[in-house]
Image 1 (cartoon, one colour):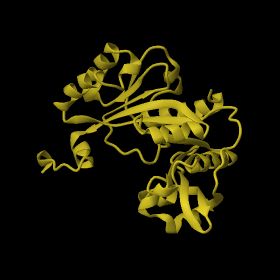
Image 2 (tube, helix red, strand yellow; image 1 turned 90 degrees about the vertical axis):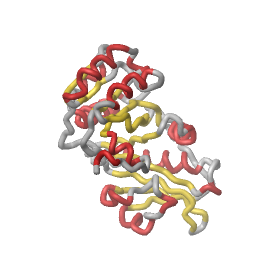
Image 3 (cartoon, rainbow, N blue to C red; image 1 turned 45 degrees about the vertical axis):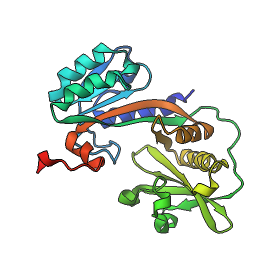
Image 4 (cartoon, rainbow, N blue to C red; image 1 turned 180 degrees about the vertical axis):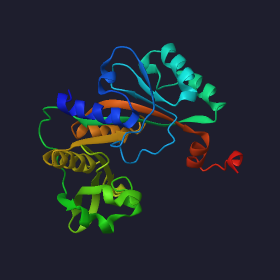
Length: 262
């Protein structure tokens, strides 16, 4: 189980990210609110966000712009809340918002530390703590999950796995929220499947908590290596999200030319 205080902080952050109340995530019925990005929202969230669906396992809270409220209200009332994030039900929503110029965009599962995690996770390589200044020369393609080139100022802490003086794995965390820091991890291909990622993730999560922050981790459901790493590192699923964005934004992410906007 996730410690109550950690879960409460996460729900308070989600509420700040979408404009609802933390208590909304604990209700047995679904909740729909006007979308509002709070002043303390996760720093990487960018508008326009047309709708955001969040579930902590009790219901779905949907924050929406007014033009999709009617469609979303029908959607969340039509299917069980845990089916709102999967096909074939997603096609129902997708078909109806397409005519408005919107598309389903991001979908992810988020992890928090499990209470009472047992023995530390170790690996065969030396682990070294890295401060923000130590990360400056590491903004390279091989560490693209651990560090974010676009938000260097938020990358505040890291743990490196070293074979001699060679960096073979890196976990980094970004101060995306006031009370929650997000973990990302990379391991060089030839050093994978040796427990390195889990050792790095576990150590960094511990260091984050020592600093009075809550570590969180994000993964696609289909990325089984990432899911397995989270679980081995003492993190367990806490909430899921799905975001609707303008179609042009999604097309651009897919590398498609959108003639309608030119």
